[in-house]
Image 1 (cartoon, helix red, strand yellow):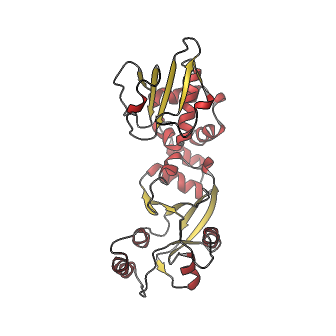
Image 2: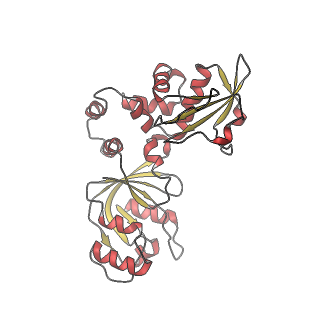
Image 3: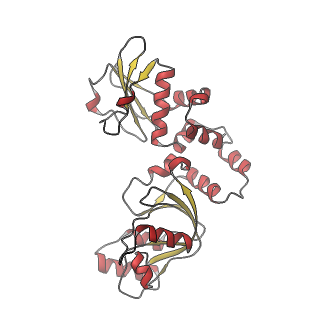
Length: 293
């Protein structure tokens, strides 16, 4: 199993979030909060104490019960920095005053490596950090395979790529690796290069509702907007009538057009475009293409 951890402790007595991160990385510890007053020696004892104190289950119960040594954890701190860890021990509870101050009484030995920003993180893993839950599983075999390679660089890269792409890289594999911003870049470049539109740069703002950018056709002067989503998301009804044409793209390809002024872009046509026009792609997208092929 593969896991992801939001590093969001509640440190005490002047300790900071950065103190918690530094301590865990330097001491090869993966820790999470929800302390209890009882002396607990097993996950079952801890779970009983949690239900008594917090009137129900909390994410630390999963942390105590589910992971096993040898499994991997993706973590992200409040500064947006990513870390990858390999679990080295079973769960244990610490009443050490420092650990209570840092809000990491629930612990496992864990060897960490710093990954950095989203630049080198598959989009599928980034998306797993959107839910607010502190600790949860990542149910994606492909991401587990990538994680194993990323952590242990001694693994033969050629073997990894052969296993991953024995039948050739597919659009499904590609769109699992790239992030939400990358998807928007692909659609924007496609509409400009293939469909003859020009993006209006000032329209590319996070505050826009329902669409990623506005375009204008270089010959007809007709306007268009693009809605790009990862997952199964239908047309935002607020887009109707906002432009002459609407382009939709969802990475799982399940969006349907219901009128002549709506065009659904397929993953296959965008992936074909990506493979044929690598010279105009952002470097991050080419990074994943190089990795996968």
